[in-house]
Image (cartoon, rainbow, N blue to C red; front, side):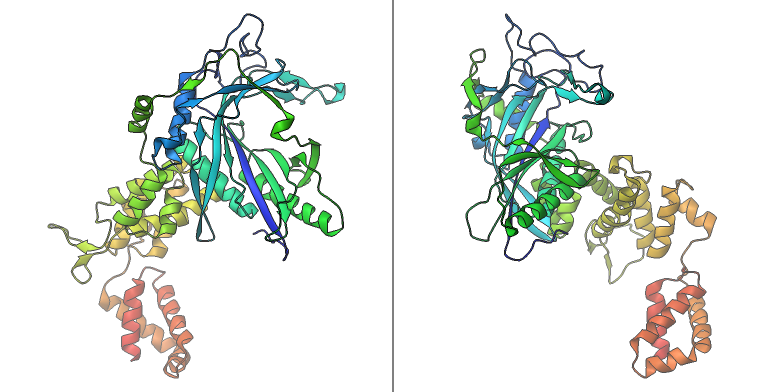
Length: 509
């Protein structure tokens, strides 16, 4: 957790470059496939050679429409019916034609918002705009250092991007990372970006400044090309610390573009920071204004999947989950599907309610306990922890939703305890079997529920632990927990914990 010194406030806004999932570039038919040999996927159009004309990629526009609808709850008013492409003139070697085609005054999407959750607290981050543009090429240094030169790969030049700009409403590195994760979830959810940060498909520039609370905005420095959430956290934390220390020492912050070095954990200035007015924008003479009809928007809207916000609300209503649980489970489409598959495959009521005819599982008070919360706990707890430890995505989890469902079902019918369930999960994760019931049978993990058998064990525990018995009767509740522990140990964790508690209290009363 970032620690911000008293008397200071951090102001952060993010610019996110999202590579759109199209087969060809934004203004040419050149491939966008990653990993080709340098300079094999750059056409004469991408380089703006004389006599060539750009033609707008319709699929890129549809990606922008999908995004505009997704961040506005399906409201189409923020998708511009008319937007304009401009030439942003600059002279970097990674774009040798001398300009980048982008949108300036009239972007394709304005407004929208992204909801984040930090420390159990929800916050809405507003979006300023999202505009279409072409990517630049890429400077290469590997293998060229000793020669004192850089190479230029133009394969990426012309790749379609949607640049998403937030309002400067984040107040910590944690909020910035939460926003970036939420945005990453949205663009992958609606299928406009593969989200691969290592390959540069989703990369963020963080504008960071500090100020006295309530005072005027400070001078911002832009941290370029952050391509991992971990690096974003580290880079912003370092930059905030550096800016505050500089100001407290009587220095001043100069507007600049900086890079983050993961090896040193520090940011370093790359060049002075340009404002928008420092670039020269001209309407592109080769491209007509982009006109998007209401019918086109309606067709795109009809094909949208259920959006994260809508699904979150449904999880709260249909599964009685807390807002926090629902937000966590809908952070990605894969996680949401995994959870719902778990619930479905149990074959049991998702929420507490009347027992359906033919249900033979043990009942409590005439009602079947709901399994949605139990499934949610497994997905957010044991599964998430193991995925994080092994660096896996949920789509690559070795434990399937059907197997989690089997575990939950055997917990509900008292075949196994929660502790035994975790042992079974470990076995599944490590490949020591693929069927829950078979693992239970092979390892002798079935829970002891016979009241007589448990009573006999408790009698032995009480006889062997008279000191704890006396302490409990003297009012020491910890002694009771010690006796429970001894009873569970005696059964090798197989006894039903609730039965042990109930029978033990009955015998001690």
